[in-house]
Length: 639
Image (cartoon, rainbow, N blue to C red):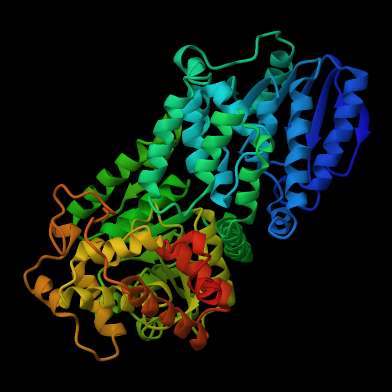
């Protein structure tokens, strides 16, 4: 092999078959990203290749963790005040990827791991795509989650490749595909094993096969006037999900595809609206907040955690165990009630079944029923998730602690009890931390890592690393009633219930907050959490005030919400997050959001969270607080 060109972020060499290998490996990043510098170097490489004409070109990554994560989001921050910079960035990628598509020799993207945004747009500009069958491939165009659109050709090429309906769904939701779905959608030509990936790519790029394109009805729906059909249904779906129009990017994506064949530069007014939108600014802010939470995962060694032992197979314990098994960890699940373990296993099976065959089987193998608790002796982290009773938890810890191996962490998933109280009987309280998950575990990205004086920093760091290992976001919170998320939600739900006491219908209250942008109204949230739990949390957080009458009445009748089939709502046939047509009282939205924001400010003032940005991050990822508003404290300061 001969080296033809060496740049800072790319290496170009040719093999014995005169196939050029263009390898991206950004030295200053853990994951490859298409920054301005990287794109300029890519243009230089394409210039060289265009004049030297290899037999074929394979573009691949030199990093083990993935292909390309996308564009450099930091560069987007300039858009609000410098529209020309945004236009220039879009033009650069659009024209460069068009050049790659038109190269006079075959091109192939050899993909593994993460391939998102601009990374997938680069792969789409190639004639072929070969995907290495690694544990966690992730292919998608998630630009909508930043309030923008796939501007480097993805909005044109993805529909032409896999059909408008599938492509619009991917672009409008930001949903990613694993290997099985990427192949079935036609996004990649072939999925291959790592050991033969390079040989497969070399053979395929010289195969002379025609480039894959959508066929039949999928092809027809990409052409005028038939484009109107998928565009109509896509707009209808967007308006159902976002009836208030809080998020402009989805409708812009549909317009750009339908009217301009994916070329946003053909109508700069659309691009300008997106780049100047406060929604885009706030979604980019949320992206950076997420990155900050991810940074906490690097404090410990995630590879040191291989075995998790979960005690309590109820809704939370079963959910935690299921998620850990799905992430590739060995999980032993203990409970005194064998039926609860069986129920957790049944629920796990339904989640595992959504994955490809090999991933599902691996997860099933990882989930090990352990009613006698034999896994305690070997576990790296033991998570207690039994009912909220101080004495019961302390009694359990007395039996666990003597059996724990050196260096293991004991963690509690308590949502309301103080770590300081729970650890009083422990011989090694410095190894005891809180890891507070949220329900449903599979959907909620945040985990509060609860700290207190006397806990070893190494234990806290390992807890953060564990959270990162299972692809969740850790938030460090000091030990205090309700921690952050529940402390904020408590007053919010209680105020909503006091509105019910005053005669305002639950569906009217929920609609007010759905219109505000919350994913779920406060009354529906209380029903989902469980009214008995809401009552217990309310007593702790209400500072001595009487619980709402409606709550007391329903709890006394054992109407506890979703889990009993009835609470504020009848749940048998009810769809979640329904809008009501009834009139909404003036200022109801403000009345409900005020205690939410005030409690967030109180928690910050207590010093339980490092700063206001982390308060916003925790509440967005722990409650689903309207992301387009940038977090409750940010919203108050910019309202």
